[in-house]
Every structure is written in structure tokens, then in C-alpha cells.
Length: 310
Figure (tube, helix red, strand yellow):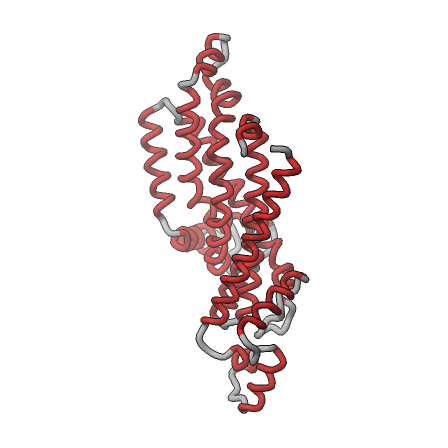
């Protein structure tokens, strides 16, 4: 399959995913109990005339298929609507918070990837005691809830030892504890996948050939086995984007950080449905684009996939 054909196919798939996410978001908006007009008017007791006016202005009094058509039409123009509570365009609201969440997710991913690579290289196929210890710690990291890890890190590193800010902040120091909290849940998964891939690669003939040519064990692992172990790792990297986005909701709330996750939590609590819908669509778009990038990287690491792809 040529690159152009592959790219067109993935872009069309992204459009289908976005349409599906928009339809689910619209259905959720319709099925949510309560009148959006009363949410927009706030906590005061509005008159029936005021409620009816807002419903008419926003099109809530029209048939559902018409509302759906208008909703998709606005999305096609890049219009995500306005926040019920903040009275701001949802696109600008999400754009203002996107970098904070992206910085947290990328740093968490980098920390998890670096620690998992070191663990896999050090323990794959050797040092049984160290391997068992590493696997045990990885299982603990996977099974421990992120909010509990965040509370423990805050208690010791922020409140007791004053090494990092307790909450908020915008400098690199404020990013350390949230990123470590987000990374710990992924280190165990990454390390186990990479270790299994390396152990399988170390038994292949090319590893034996590299050893007979005088390559040291560490060199064989880093130069040959690690590349093969990266293929399944790249695959789960796309999957882990969802874990990073969902984990960011909890982490940003615990550490009082700005970000899309915190905006999402506040919007759900306040039933600010345009914001909830906007975050869902932006998350679906980010997930689709990152998976497209992962698929492209997959084809670069293993060129055989270019020929085997239908």
C-alpha cells in the first residue's frame, strides 16, 4: 500500500471516528435528565417565559433530527458551542487548557517509557532474583490507584519534606509529582511488554549471530533486542493515550493543576454539556491522530508491514 493511499484511508477512518464520537455525545446530551435552558439560566428560579425564550434561541424546541443536523453542521465548521456556565466559546476554553494537559501527559509518558526501558534491559532473561523483584514492584504499581499514589506523594514530598509545590504552580517543579503519579500506572505495563519482547528477541538467531561476532550482552540488548521489543511497545503506546487522558482528570484534580481534565470534571459536576461534548470530541481527535502517528511509526520500525498491509 502506498503512503498516500494509507494516509487517505486513515484520514477517512478518523472522520468516521469523529462522527461516531459526535453522535454518541449528542445522544448523551439528549438523554441527560433536566432542561439545559434551566442550567443556562443558573440557580435562580426563572419564569416559564425565560426558559422558553432560551430554548427557542438555542434551538432546543426543534425536533431532535433537526437539532442533530445543526449540531453536526456546527462541528463541521469547527464550532464547539459556548459554555453554559462560563459563557465562553468551548474551543477557546479547551485551547487555553490544552498545553497544560499535553505537558503532563507527555512528561508522564516519557518518565514511564524511560523507567520501563531500564527495567526491561536490566532484567530480561537474566538475574532471576532481580527479575522477580522488578515484576513484583510492577504489579504493585499497576494495581495501586493513581489517586492514592498522588496523595502519598503529596504527603511526603510536598507537605512533609517541602521538595515540591503542594498545589498549582506552572514551573517544572510543579510538574514532577503529577507526572510521576501518572507514569507509575504505566511503568508496570510498559516494562512487562518490553521485557517479554526482549526475551523473545534474545532467543532469535540474529542475537546469537551478534554474540558470536563479539558483541557484548548489553550491546546485543540495546542494539538488536530492544528494537524488536519496541514494536509491541509502540502498539500499546497508542492505547495508553486513553489511559493518560482519563488519568489526567484525576491527577489534575488532586494536584489542583489547570488542564482539560479539570475542566472536564467541573463541567460534569455543573452539567455544562457543551464543554463535556467538546472535551469528548477533542479527546477522540487526539486519540485518532496519535494512533495514526503510531501506525506510521510502526511501519518505519518494521518495514515488512508496508508490504503485508492490504
